[in-house]
Amino acid sequence: MSFTSSLVAVANMIDPQLSYWSVLLTSGREWSEHHMIPTMRKGQAGVRQLDWGDDIVSTGDIHRVKEIRLHCPDGRTATLEIADGMEPFQFKTKSLDMIGAGGNSLEYQVIGRVIDKVSGRCECFIWDYKPKPGEPNLVAYKSTIYHFGGWRDTVTPIGALGLHVQGFRL
Image (cartoon, rainbow, N blue to C red; front, side, top):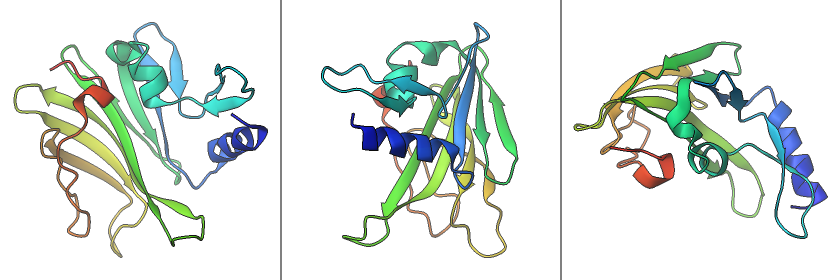
């Protein structure tokens, strides 16, 4: 990671216009997307933002999540408690504003928990950056991880979530 990409990570971390996730582990430790950690790749120095897949799923911390939170740009925090047998997850989607312009924009960020492993039923909170006029940015939504739908008619249904990527044990 270069010095420049470290600066981008720091800028993303402190942007008040962006939502972010955090988790409380059964050990009492808290992690969030705003935590900066050193890069460990040979020949690269710098820091990066904590990553769900690289740092929560791959370390096994995914199975020690007691609570997952979505911190919203408007100051609200949506919280889901994770009981035994539930699986937490998080994802977000960005789009390219204009080819060649270099601008990426977030479409939405989702936190959720699987409440029935057989059917894949899940409960979620979504921060929608581009809601329809008059609709809220923060949405409570129920779906299934096998056929995740769209919470408004202008969102393309997501379909099946990457079970391995999310660290699910179903």
